[in-house]
Amino acid sequence: MAAEPVWITLTGVRATGFHGVLPEETRVGQEFIVDVQLETAVDLTRDELDGTVNYAEVAETVVRHITGEPLQLIETLAGRIADDIASIDAVTTVEVVVHKPHAPIPVPFTDVTITVIRSKQ
Image 1 (cartoon, rainbow, N blue to C red):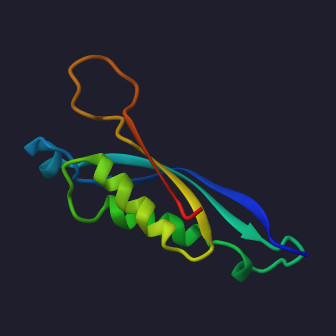
Image 2 (image 1 turned 120 degrees about the vertical axis):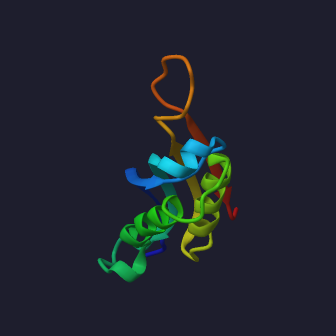
Image 3 (image 1 turned 90 degrees about the vertical axis):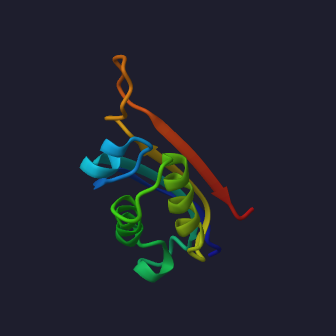
């Protein structure tokens, strides 16, 4: 049987990072939350991890970026996460959403998100 398109979604991967423009953001840090949706092709007649994308490794990649080099823009953070995940051979498309729920915005708000999509198609 041929491989079929499958979407894998990780929601709410959390870690503390030091991203932002303001000095306080890079000094104190804050929680960032990332959602990832990726497309891959899976032979559904095989029940083996090597036939798909290991989402535990994807989650570790996300955390490595959140806790890694401080960046000014979460747009850059989302792009780097998307590029890393898109570099996995089995991934054909990836959508990364970075949430910054504690952004320094002087009015009431619930969340700020940035979405980046990469596709090999």
